[in-house]
Image 1 (tube, rainbow, N blue to C red):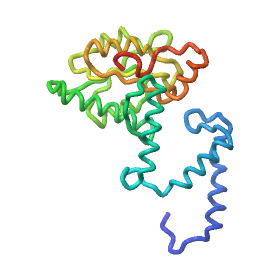
Image 2: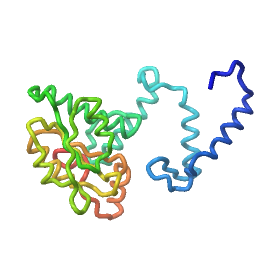
Image 3: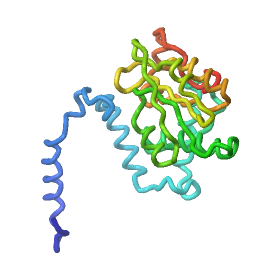
Image 4: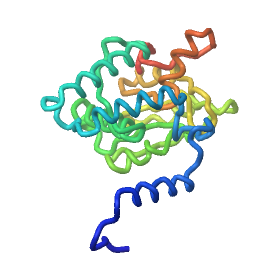
Length: 231
């Protein structure tokens, strides 16, 4: 396909784009797990209006677009409070994969500064962890060391301990994991990392904005967030 010499009328393009939506899944059905979270037409309209107002802005410069920086700062503060550490700071990312990339980079950079003797860093993660961790390891030169899960499909802490070496810089757990929707034993994994003086990351891409509210509703949510020592 080549770039057309002349363009097409706007109405024709709009009609073609509308027709192409027939190829997509019905994202309003509530059955497109992890791809689209449809909260209703009223919420969708709020999102549409907000996007229409700000879609010409560029988050690259918080000085040129101070509105975006204000949004980012306030959302991060609210999220930190939900996750057990109101003093925490952070940054917006494009999504879960970039967040994991930043996690592994932070651990690698910490190790370069604090454990310069480590030349081939490793991270320990259960086989149920999101594959973006492996991608991050490939990009950043951190070897993923996969450990099995127990019969309850949660990370095997004994296996994590056995996998520890002098080159381990990071231990990973999920809250919950993608394959089975269960929460790894975060306090035990974090305690192991703490004991070794290394980093512990909890991937709460799916649970981060659900588990705090489930806990408030009285559901038995195990410890998983920034209030856990070592996380």
